[in-house]
Length: 588
Image 1 (cartoon, rainbow, N blue to C red):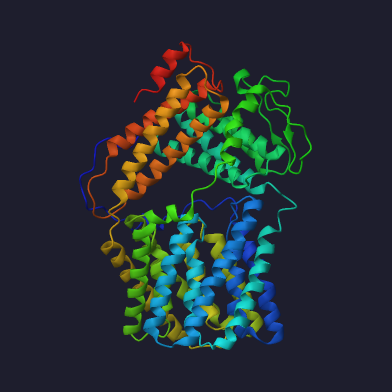
Image 2: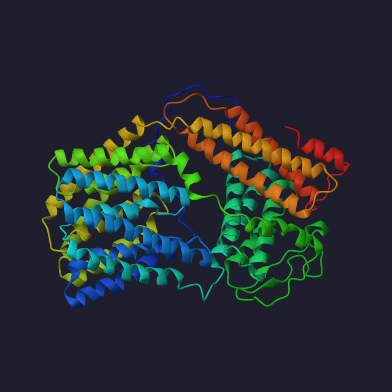
């Protein structure tokens, strides 16, 4: 459990070694890695055959859209990928037109900085990513410094659009084979994290970090399942039941069997039937047995003949699907400090790079744009990772250059290898992925023609250091003083959601839909509070955060969630009367 004592200090220790520590690879690291290779290879190889490899930079802009939306259900992925392609084309169009109208480097850097800020704000508001705005900023910033004429702009945009359409097809290609693959992975993650939390709680080693991670995973699973609005299916309903069971495990970890959760998670990851746990009010003793039957991946005909308890669990899910998402403009407001940081840092990095005589100031601009995270501490960590990854990456570039210059085909194959390596490694740590991203960016500059290796390496090192230092300085200068207010608002939201859930749990006439909606709303508010508090804790100069109130609010919310689950009948009553149970479990 985190400390309940407010922290008055304003100076925070910035990590160095910890920022470089490797983590576990993503469970689906191979999906974006293979997708980007499949999206980049055909257009690039076609241009090699036509002898126009100088145009590959435009097709690659569209192909890189295949990196996005791998965690989205396919119905939602189709829309997200389409918007990513359109966003890429919009930024590319602005850059190409600007490049055709002026060669003034200061003006071009300013345009690139404003584009980077807009891309950062929109990607964060819509939660598009990874890789979020960095790819879009790289595409638009790089093309700003490619000589253009207005007459060439439509053709270059057409190449990017065609490659973007191909990237869309690549991203959607697995849908016929595993139509519920993303939902299955999110559900399995929720079950596994709930099992891990239950194990620590049963051993008496319960920690706030493990509980927050479990709630975040369950919340992410619900977000994934709800992303495919108005598209209910038997398989998805079975997955929703399993996520409910993960929530029940969080409410009563001591009464949970972690092995059963892991068994369900293993079954969900495959392509066979989705386990269908019985009514938890009867401890899975229904006609389907303890692990029950299931739904196959493509089964849309099986009749949903679950018990009344099973149906009650999901009434609130249907109600939430009918709720429209928040408008984009309301999500952009809190991101204003990040947008200002991005615009200022990118512009200053580009200007300093120009003052030092750089030919490619967009490298410094993109470095600065890649730094900005939710708070200053994370931004510092990203700066360390970026510098280390780029410095190692230029050495890798120097090593592969002789191979890449054997011919156009060799150059394309090296670019494909770097694309694959970047996506395969970046999940372990950002710096490790940057080791492949750096030679990739340098090799792209050689598509129109080979350039001196020493000059490229020197420029890249200088621009990396300039972008990291100036970008971080801008983050220090533009402090997010609204972070404390957002914590206060999140605390208020949790208190209101808890009071509503407690009132419904104590009332005898609460409907299943109201109880489920209240429980889900409270769970989402708790996840948001933890994310907001963590982000604010990493800011540089602000008043002391109400850490004690945050901890107490989380504790009270978790007790209320447990009481709501019991009121729904998803957990056995602990042996007290209904009124006593609700009074004890909802007190702060």
